Length: 410
Ligand SMILES: *Cc1c(COP(=O)(O)O)cnc(C)c1O
Image 1 (tube, rainbow, N blue to C red):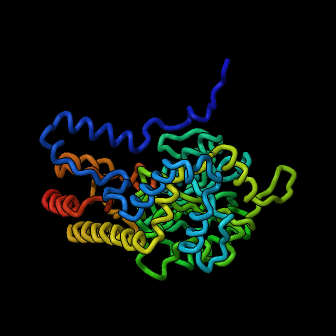
Image 2: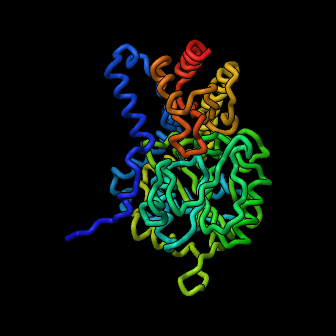
Image 3: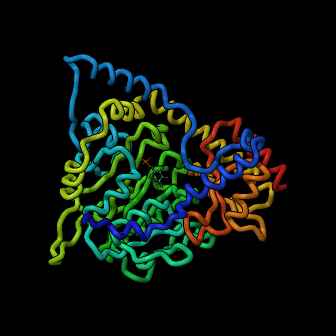
């Protein structure tokens, strides 16, 4: 008799994106005309083609693999030096991160989930509300929570509300937590954390011996120079923070798959006896045992993001998406709705009109404007009353979405 991991039974069936898919399917089946007009601004996926520099690097790498003199088999599990060095040089210049603290992978979604492998049982976990659902579900899966209540909140998790009042950056909790997930620029709210706010979090983590799991998937969208792109810009963060970054949103690698995690050698955790151990060798061991490296052509493609052509092409992509965000912001502001985000992140976070909740807004946008948005409540209870519009789209689609929002909600 094979037993199962009972924790999986605690997971809520109504995961956000399947529910969106279900409603969209029901709508399109009943309304063929609406279906033909449908524009998706829901899931946070890029839409524009891969930068040419990345495509060329991948083609060349495939050709290398096609010749016995340049063929490569298994690579280093942690990533090729050419990519780790390029990451340090281009992303962490002056921040004191070394290449062997960078672990290349096939995605931040996996990394943010897998990182729990190296932590013990019984850690108190803090997540923001609203939140990227992966952090919650992976904690449920490993048994770090109890059951979900009616509102979908899990027993045992510490929810840190992010609201307009705190500019969508959580207030430092009074209680001790062991792991805290922070994501800035934020998905879904599009908010950023200031240097001062991150300093407070680093001070909290150091004082309480907590570890910050910092998701910087959207760092490339930061336009304002005063906004930190990395947690390591904050002094002391190398003693208490792991950072996750991805090529998905800057290089458009959501379908190509490449990301990396920075585990500084100075971060320590505590064993069952109370002795301290560095996390770096644990993650290194985990990574090389359960992962065999991102593919060679993909790592070449990722490294090309840092070539002069790659940098120019990525900037152009980001500029395009950020112009989309500005158009969406402007449209919603004109309607008198409270608008947040979209200035250093590809997501615009909008307050629903009086008397309409998040799913009500979702249905209205779907039925009247034939536009798919994401209901804020799907990211957590504190997201109720908001909706997220993604700026990941073609300009034509965004202009059309703006017209339809104005016509149907104005
Ligand atoms: C898109 C996204 C990522 C990137 O995930 P990948 O698996 O690297 O594609 C990570 N974190 C957040 C919050 C995201 O929205």
